[in-house]
Image 1 (cartoon, rainbow, N blue to C red):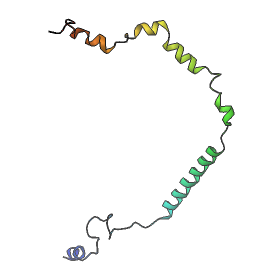
Image 2: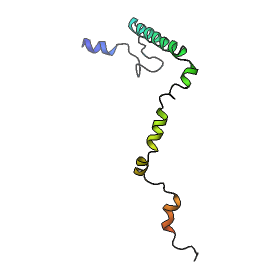
Image 3: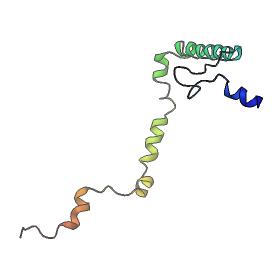
Image 4: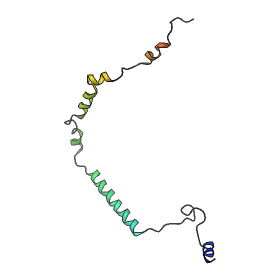
Length: 106
């Protein structure tokens, strides 16, 4: 009986408790503030590293040329053995060539 009365007259939010005009707002805790502060500090460190890069633009423009990765990749695909494995190029004209019976119109 007493539990029923407590539940009947308990002050609750109408509808969904986390949406709307009369929603239930969770109070901000110290732990949440500390987590947010750490996140902002970490983000600021990342932005500092991005603002002051390790190498300059002039140094970074040609650093991959010495490794010759691009040339090795192109050489790998232009190799004769690799080209033989691939299927030959087929044009639309070759595909539709079977539909040609005769040139003259009836």
